Length: 249
Image: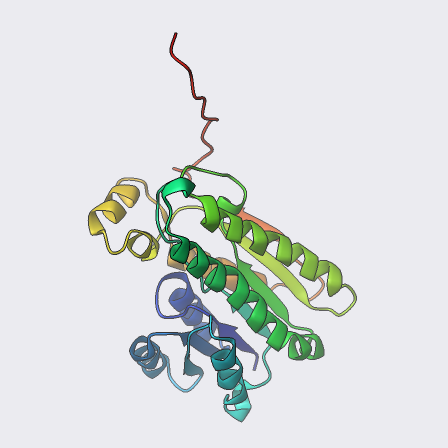
């Protein structure tokens, strides 16, 4: 039986990914900060899911949680780096520096720290890494600033991992989702439900299950195949034009 670890598993894509993998017969380590949600998820899905509550931004806590894994969950075949967030929607010149730091700490520093910790075992097991990036890492938009930059980092880190892991048998993939209806916008706007409803209303966005199914598909491909990068959008979402500022007169 194969074992996966999924970060950011307390809601949205992470929770759906735990469900998808567990449903396909994987053992899954579900991680996140909200211990009550993880416990409920593990209780629902059974002994094949291990709840590990910690803040992925805390490297010491991450190491301690990995060291404390039960024996049957220690041989990890798949790392799904899903934990991430966006904070704030304003332009860079009015942004909150603490929010920028939180995004960098979560989307970049935490991701590389847990990847670094698990690489020896993933190489030994000829495992796989799936990093959750975003179309925001490719296409800029007003207010995207540091969030988009962190996701561009994830895209490039994924490609460079592929290069470094050449010959090891480890597969490394990035998924770049477009609009997915989750708690993402609630978190970004500090709990503004109206803003979330406005963004997703009538748009037929993707669901967390859509992305979880994609993770499962990548994870179960034959070992000689690697998806380097996969960009997914709902049909209702496409590419905007360039902005042009015009002077008067």
